[in-house]
Length: 232
Image 1 (cartoon, one colour):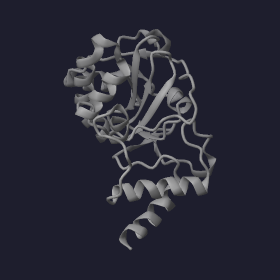
Image 2 (cartoon, one colour):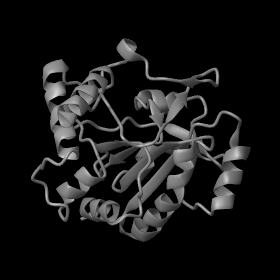
Image 3 (cartoon, helix red, strand yellow):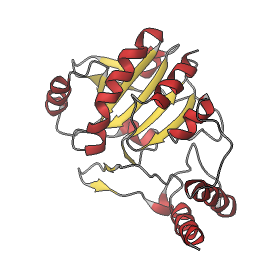
């Protein structure tokens, strides 16, 4: 009975939000600077998950049963198992990631297409977002371990107060991967970011591999296994 009650609870949530997340997130900032909750029925069609109620409810029920002790036959020590453990959601169809251009902390223009041929971990974050700040050291460790093999971490800051706050945070943490400024939210809107942190994995061919909503331990064995498999 407890499992069924839990399933009913999560099915209700899934009907309201196509991307339910068990991880800590911060609402994205709207143009006026206030935090904005997901927009409900006014949302644009999602690039990754657009299955309507009956099938969505069934998928959510499977998820709850798995969390409650049921099993989904995915070995933890396989790339597919790493996708599952990190809760990486695959796109419903293979699409190219939209190109964009933003300014980095040195005032230089950087485009996503500059990194074609490399595996890109695109991370939307902000200095005011606690979960974002917590996962930054792990992102740094992951990038240091795999940058020579072709991994790029692109961190897009949502802060609207100019580069100084972001630059101070980056310098204090010793983060060396590229940080770009998306204070106006142009790229967040194009990528349908509804909470921070949100990360996308983009393949060497410039196409989406998966999306991750919420904080992750990017220095974990699962994360390293996933990145290593995508770099092969």
